[in-house]
Picture 1 (tube, rainbow, N blue to C red):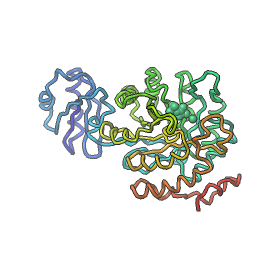
Picture 2: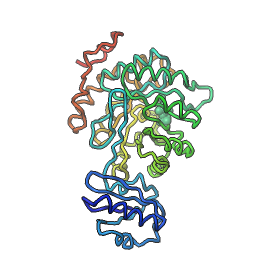
Picture 3: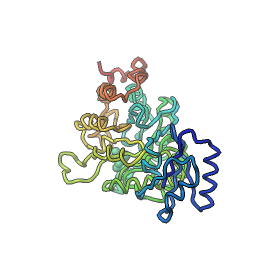
Picture 4: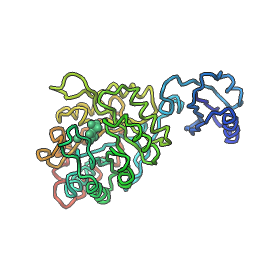
Length: 367
Ligand code: PEP
Ligand code: MN
């Protein structure tokens, strides 16, 4: 149940109302919206007549039931107001949200060496990416497949961060590694395979780091939002949803199916920002740009795309990696985002002139 307060309701009235709710053994969660304050009640309120709540204060505009299993993640919980997830990076705060420019996250699948990640970071930064995502700990189907360079990769990511100024996203698979990963990452990634690892969700929910929550391979939208609810319920409001693919039957031409329709569906259900992982969603380089355009048109807030300085030598997922075409990709996205009002002019190739010293940036810039 949520209580929407009238505009300009005095703070004292809100405190008074919260005190009354506590006396009823209800725990109020106050969200300050742009114009109105909303008080959420996540406990079971089926026995309570909304009119009883309404009578608690003259400043209550309306009392609305939330009849969904996810409460804090629901759009109603914020009275329809989208959440901005603000992330601090060395080059300033980046906002993921509906009324903000598209955020591009570039990423080699995993961090191979310091040189490789620093080089990639500089290239993608120059082309307009705001985040670098790279796997230090990789979830692999086979126990014999390469599992990531772990702690060393985290150090290399830290170097790439300080050299490029990009924010860092990397995956957490094990609660034991969380403190170490959180000391480098600006956003913690929960991978598709751990979407329902509830103890991990509770642990990242207890940190103050934004969390990128990937949709599991066969998760329904409701299951995904229930996982987001775990993180929100543990006290961390900064959850970003990441659609990456769902399992369908055509594995020959599309590998998996990027569920573009999830974007408008999520918009109608939740206030949380939405990232589309293009590379996982398509598995094929030639599908990345068309699906990116579809995702932007459908209203996503951020795109994640795999890049690699030399895809032919990548140990995994080279076939879906975009470098050295990343800058051309960004050029197309700029035009497309401008049309949809989702581009920040200051990032339009603002760093075209900056040389990284390796002479490769020039080859990435579209003419
Ligand atoms: C990844 O992002 O590196 C990854 C393994 O993706 P997913 O969890 O979506 O399979
Ligand atoms: Mn990968």
